[in-house]
Length: 326
Ligand SMILES: Nc1ncnc2c1ncn2[C@@H]1O[C@H](COP(=O)(O)OP(=O)(O)O)[C@@H](O)[C@H]1O
Ligand SMILES: N[C@@H](CCOP(=O)(O)O)C(=O)O
Picture 1: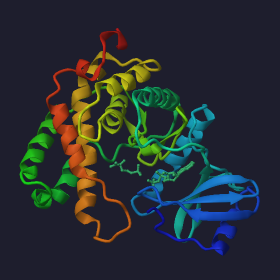
Picture 2: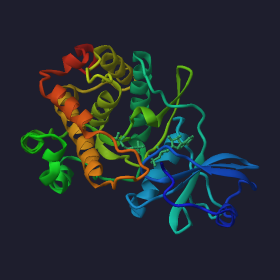
Picture 3: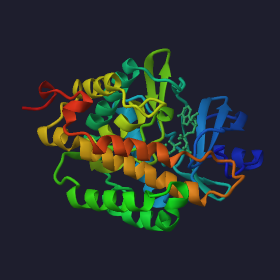
Picture 4: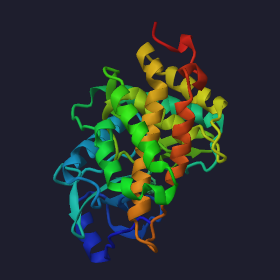
């Protein structure tokens, strides 16, 4: 589910009066999503997505997220455009929650992406990195290497309930990543959660990126690593080299990688796998039975982590010397 906070029609009409979007025709909650409450709104002025920001979103981060979508959309990236209120801002309040409206994007996410889709995703990710390069607000990544240990400490005692031996394996992995996490790679604004459910396609053409609520400043190549994990593994756990190569090919066709980024990719991919393993493990252990939200399997990310651990060089992902800035 993703309607944690319900909204009644009177509240919604009062909220819409702050916008120049006409009158309310209909609204309904959207079941997909994890973090926030989302509604599909139709007004005489168009179709919009209304989001009520729930507890895990820090209110102070909202100007970054909304400002970033505005910046990227104005630069021509296909992403939701925050709708301006009559007071010139983007953020209001509805049912006791911070709330905003963004433009509706056509398209649907792919349940079974193919290599050609991965190439499109690589291109779009690089286009986002380029378009975000002059975005003036900064937001530190709250889920990077320094944050993994506190997250792990919250689950560590119960980890072996999920899989025997997990505690020892993650203790070792985390210590190694903390010791060898790369320094001084090119940084910028990253999406940080560009999973298939956050990328829309119309037929085989990528039509838009959504869900910028983990976006932050971090290594650009870390975002590539997140996408390799999210897009290039098969349901049976095998890494699909053709998809990996297509994703990287698409990326470097817009933004070539530097040598140190390429070299760091196996480590970044391990870190990216650990990051999603840890948040999933936390949710797995703390979400009450019967809650409507779908719990995602942490072990899927443990398997990805193990795969990257045995990678010797980024050429094994399909990265070629000619893809690099010389
Ligand atoms: N701009 C948009 N245009 C069309 N549909 C959207 C848009 N934003 C969100 N959605 C729909 O809402 C769902 C949940 O959005 P998402 O941002 O992923 O939520 P959450 O942050 O709660 O995980 C998406 O899967 C999609 O169906
Ligand atoms: N992509 C994350 C979970 C975040 O969910 P989203 O609906 O906000 O993309 C995962 O798979 O663990």
